[in-house]
Image (cartoon, rainbow, N blue to C red; front, side, top):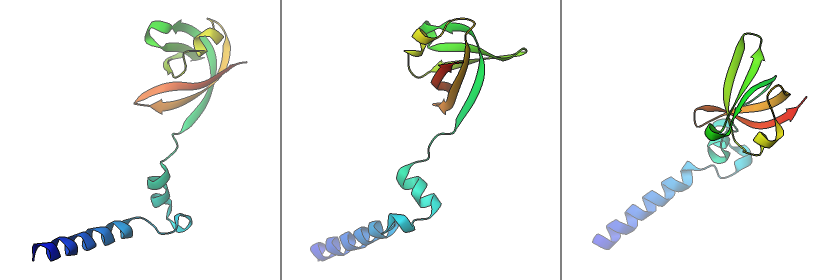
Length: 108
Protein backbone atom coordinates (compact mmCIF):
# COMPACT_ATOMS: atom_id res chain seq x y z
CA UNK A 1 0.00 0.00 0.00
CA UNK A 2 2.72 2.48 0.98
CA UNK A 3 4.81 1.67 -2.09
CA UNK A 4 1.91 2.29 -4.48
CA UNK A 5 1.18 5.61 -2.74
CA UNK A 6 4.82 6.68 -3.13
CA UNK A 7 4.81 5.71 -6.82
CA UNK A 8 1.56 7.59 -7.45
CA UNK A 9 2.93 10.66 -5.67
CA UNK A 10 6.16 10.53 -7.71
CA UNK A 11 4.17 10.31 -10.97
CA UNK A 12 2.07 13.34 -10.03
CA UNK A 13 5.11 15.39 -8.99
CA UNK A 14 7.15 14.49 -12.07
CA UNK A 15 4.31 15.22 -14.48
CA UNK A 16 3.78 18.63 -12.82
CA UNK A 17 7.47 19.47 -13.17
CA UNK A 18 7.45 18.53 -16.83
CA UNK A 19 4.41 20.71 -17.45
CA UNK A 20 5.91 23.78 -15.73
CA UNK A 21 8.70 24.28 -18.32
CA UNK A 22 7.94 24.83 -21.99
CA UNK A 23 8.79 21.83 -24.15
CA UNK A 24 10.13 24.05 -26.94
CA UNK A 25 12.08 27.17 -25.79
CA UNK A 26 11.46 28.79 -29.20
CA UNK A 27 7.71 28.76 -28.53
CA UNK A 28 8.00 30.10 -24.97
CA UNK A 29 6.31 33.40 -24.16
CA UNK A 30 8.42 36.47 -23.40
CA UNK A 31 7.84 36.05 -19.65
CA UNK A 32 8.88 32.39 -19.83
CA UNK A 33 12.04 33.27 -21.79
CA UNK A 34 13.00 35.92 -19.24
CA UNK A 35 12.58 33.32 -16.49
CA UNK A 36 14.63 30.77 -18.43
CA UNK A 37 17.44 33.08 -19.55
CA UNK A 38 17.25 35.95 -17.08
CA UNK A 39 16.69 39.60 -17.92
CA UNK A 40 19.69 41.64 -19.02
CA UNK A 41 20.25 44.66 -16.79
CA UNK A 42 19.43 48.05 -18.27
CA UNK A 43 22.50 50.05 -19.29
CA UNK A 44 22.66 53.84 -19.48
CA UNK A 45 25.40 55.63 -21.41
CA UNK A 46 26.42 58.98 -19.94
CA UNK A 47 29.07 61.65 -20.47
CA UNK A 48 30.81 63.82 -17.93
CA UNK A 49 34.04 65.03 -16.38
CA UNK A 50 35.83 63.14 -13.60
CA UNK A 51 35.49 65.17 -10.39
CA UNK A 52 37.22 62.78 -7.98
CA UNK A 53 38.54 59.22 -7.76
CA UNK A 54 38.35 57.27 -4.49
CA UNK A 55 39.92 53.81 -4.69
CA UNK A 56 39.34 53.14 -0.98
CA UNK A 57 35.55 53.09 -1.55
CA UNK A 58 35.68 51.89 -5.20
CA UNK A 59 33.90 55.03 -6.40
CA UNK A 60 34.34 57.78 -8.96
CA UNK A 61 32.50 61.09 -8.75
CA UNK A 62 31.59 62.50 -12.16
CA UNK A 63 30.26 65.95 -13.00
CA UNK A 64 27.37 65.31 -15.39
CA UNK A 65 26.42 68.98 -15.81
CA UNK A 66 27.52 72.31 -14.30
CA UNK A 67 25.07 71.78 -11.43
CA UNK A 68 24.98 67.98 -11.09
CA UNK A 69 27.69 65.67 -9.75
CA UNK A 70 27.03 61.99 -9.07
CA UNK A 71 29.08 59.30 -7.37
CA UNK A 72 29.24 55.87 -9.03
CA UNK A 73 30.60 52.51 -7.89
CA UNK A 74 33.22 50.92 -10.15
CA UNK A 75 32.85 47.31 -11.29
CA UNK A 76 36.46 46.92 -12.51
CA UNK A 77 39.24 48.45 -10.43
CA UNK A 78 41.43 48.83 -13.53
CA UNK A 79 39.31 51.88 -14.42
CA UNK A 80 41.16 53.75 -11.67
CA UNK A 81 44.37 53.46 -13.72
CA UNK A 82 42.69 54.97 -16.79
CA UNK A 83 41.21 58.20 -15.43
CA UNK A 84 42.28 61.27 -13.50
CA UNK A 85 40.61 64.43 -12.22
CA UNK A 86 39.39 66.57 -15.13
CA UNK A 87 39.22 63.80 -17.76
CA UNK A 88 36.20 63.98 -20.07
CA UNK A 89 34.66 60.50 -20.19
CA UNK A 90 31.83 58.51 -21.72
CA UNK A 91 30.70 55.63 -19.52
CA UNK A 92 28.10 52.88 -19.21
CA UNK A 93 26.17 52.44 -15.98
CA UNK A 94 24.09 49.54 -14.68
CA UNK A 95 22.16 49.16 -11.45
CA UNK A 96 24.02 46.36 -9.65
CA UNK A 97 22.93 45.36 -6.15
CA UNK A 98 21.10 48.67 -5.76
CA UNK A 99 24.10 50.86 -6.64
CA UNK A 100 24.66 52.68 -9.94
CA UNK A 101 27.85 51.03 -11.16
CA UNK A 102 30.24 51.93 -13.98
CA UNK A 103 30.63 48.85 -16.17
CA UNK A 104 32.51 50.50 -19.05
CA UNK A 105 34.41 53.77 -19.49
CA UNK A 106 36.36 55.52 -22.22
CA UNK A 107 38.05 58.90 -22.41
CA UNK A 108 36.66 61.40 -24.90
